[in-house]
Image (cartoon, rainbow, N blue to C red; front, side):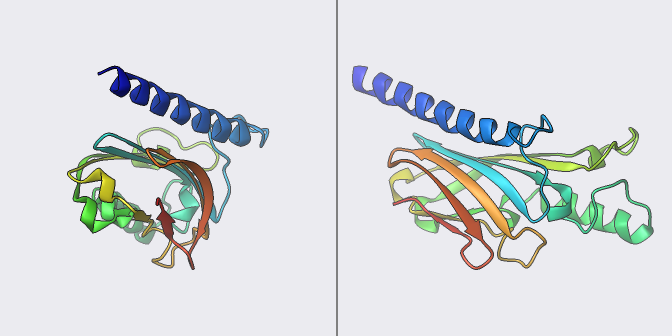
Length: 182
């Protein structure tokens, strides 16, 4: 029991360290965002603790749509509605290695564009939190960020990972959308 407590504590400390590092770098952009608002790139934080895999993706809405303001045309309204529907399926953004047998337990997507009853100020962002429960977490060898390999406007994804195999930070691209964990 004591070994588990130390392992769990170490995992939380590593996740906190990676989160602080990513947050510090994001705040360095001078805008006070929790992540930099940059077109063509986004940030992701990935953690595996026990059977729970968490993926958080943050970026400019422009990375997922062709605009980041309140929709002005019927086509933009349709595009926004389609994105909201696509975000209900975690596989639209990220796919864990099949052998880990991960099942989605929650998907939460937030953006100022999702509540058009309030005015959208400036450029809208998208924040997505996904949780999985993995039946075989030791077999989780990779994560495919499918949002990169579908030809969307996002070209780079800066990923910070913390898990039983350690921690790492990598930049994924459309040409290399897979985070290797082992």
